[in-house]
Amino acid sequence: MRLPRGDEAGTVRLTSAALAATLHAPEPFTPGAQETARSVLAVPTLTDTAEDRVAALWHGTVSADPHPNPDPRDVPRRRRQRRGVLGGWLLPAVVLIAVLAYLAWQRHAPALAVTGATVHTDSAGPACDGTATVVGTLHTNGRAGTVSYRWKRSDGTVSGVLRQQVAKDAHRTDVALRWTFDGHGTVRATATLEVLSPDPADASATFTYACP
Image (tube, rainbow, N blue to C red):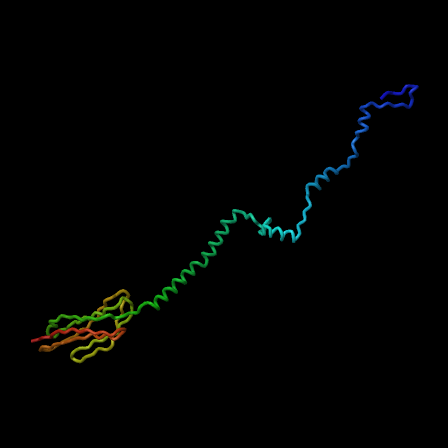
């Protein structure tokens, strides 16, 4: 730009630089416009209606699980909870099953049975005014229970009904008769063991009482 001389009053000449600046002046800038544009572009517009979600679930593009990726730290906790629940009812259930099995076994297991009987004593008999000991043996099947029996003597004496407890796994149980003699003479004596229940059986033994 040159200052006007006297004969050039009112004339202004612009250089090319000034002209370029004038021609390429930027448009007015509105504060916040650029930031607004960026914020608008950073938030896309989505349409997510109920129909769109149903269609996405049908095609398998989304998961119906609201928590598809659970925290791995929750897995041991859930396992402990399951074990706690199982342990809470498992022991009582096992005890109950064991009791029921035992009761069923007791009810349906074979009962006590007498399979036979034997009797033995000293065949020589007792001495004068002595007592003969006659031993009877009950043979059973190993079950526990009670055997009813009685002794019958050859002199006509019959004992009352006697009962003998038989232990479990005891296949042989002994019972005894004591027969006392007095006086002089010779007697041929027989003692008979008669089993009444649970199964009938009998056995006898004979001895001689001799007192000169």
